Image (cartoon, chains in turn green, yellow):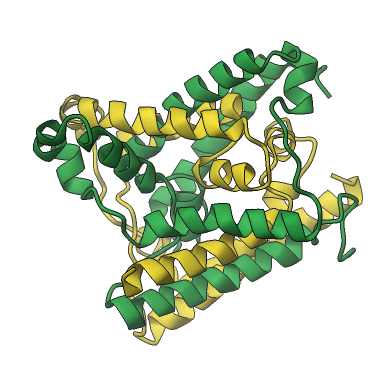
Amino acid sequence: MKRKTKDRGWSPYLAGALLGLLAVVSVWATTALLGKSTYLGASTTFVRAAGLLERTVAGEHVAANEYFKKEKVRVDWQFMLVCGIFLGALVSSLSDRSFKLEGVPPVWKKRFGPSVGKRAAGAFLGGIVAMVGARMADGCPSGHGLSGMMQLSGSAFVALAMFFCVGVIVAAIFYGRRAS
Amino acid sequence: MSTEQILGLMTGVAFGFLLQKGRVLRFEKQLGALMLRDMTIFKFMLSSILVGMVGINLLSDAGIITLSHKAMNVGAVVVGGALFGAGWAIMGFCPGTSVGALGEGRWHALFAALGMVAGAALYAELYPFFKSTVLAWKNFGKIGLPEVTGLSPWVIIALFWAATISLFAWFEKKGL
């Protein structure tokens, strides 16, 4: 097994195994320090971000919304975790010079051309659909895919299978087999 | 910042660092996985699950941590999972990786993140409707595979390890 990959990254087996260790240490640390076993996740943070933004223009509406009440609009552990992902990726990519400004990814360009507007629209609309799905399923590839699988949750196996199976079908339709 | 926020931030920095070093943040890696051409994301995710499931179950058996299953609500997980898969393929990022991709300079991920904030706002508005429809079909509750199958978690973990290691060997043989 190679330790370095062609794009000068770490072996995905090694980086993944280290993330597994981090996940375990993190559950232990949150239990010990915060009094509640908290698992890695990301998508609830988008609900809180939406609530925080909406609150600046429509405070009463957010306060009265059942879902915002359920998920509690505040800057919590997971919110800071997601901010940390940004910082960690920034530090890592600057330190090994893999940081690169990119407005349209090559695979997209090959299929839909160099228009930033088109890519922005695709990313935005895809984002809306994905997040409605993630909130309905109560998790994303972090919450279900990593944390749920590690706990052997029944829902995680079903959710992850749905994510990938439908993702594979839609990617084949949307990008076509020739876009390599 | 509170202890909770500092702990979250530190964990997140390590999380983002490993995602970036594993090179799994990129659009072409996400699409590569969904188009079954590049298995980097499968290798990364499955490796972390292999290590994590042993550690989590050890700590849980020892009574140090508690498990926190998400509910096996059939409509929610199947319909929600399908919607997520479709959006994921078009956007080319998942929630965590969109923020990480932004960190490594792929600024089109910002549109994905904004779309997801909009999607979350939309879900909050539609929640009462979903609650009386999709979410109300059939809920098996917060169940784990050991309860479903009647097997010890360690038997399931051993089977999962065996299947995953065989899959890894096949990836390497095929050069995926």
